[in-house]
Image 1 (cartoon, rainbow, N blue to C red):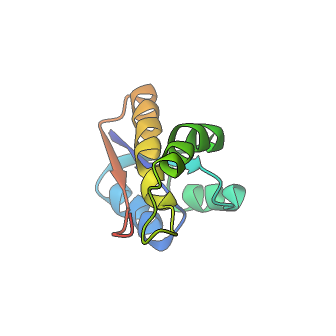
Image 2: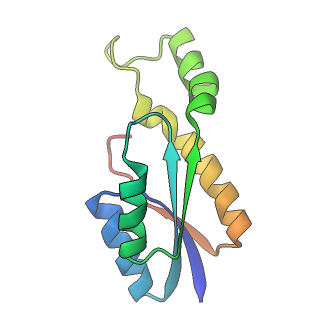
Length: 119
């Protein structure tokens, strides 16, 4: 069975994606990144498992996010219209970096996400 590591948010898109991937014959490993968004990770973990994920990784990336992404963005005045600091877009490379690490650890065949157009 092929294995995929899914960047999982707990929302409708990625929850449906777990079922869809399982129906296509994949083992799905869910990956969640805590970058300070205040999500209820235990509740979301239960949702991932109940929709078919075989395992769930939850990584606390808050410190790395602030140190390596947020502070440099503030220093560069990287703000949309001078006031919105693009936290969603800033977090994507960090999430992808750690998703790749989980995929390597799991010896996964693929990675997936349900990213919308907001960043």
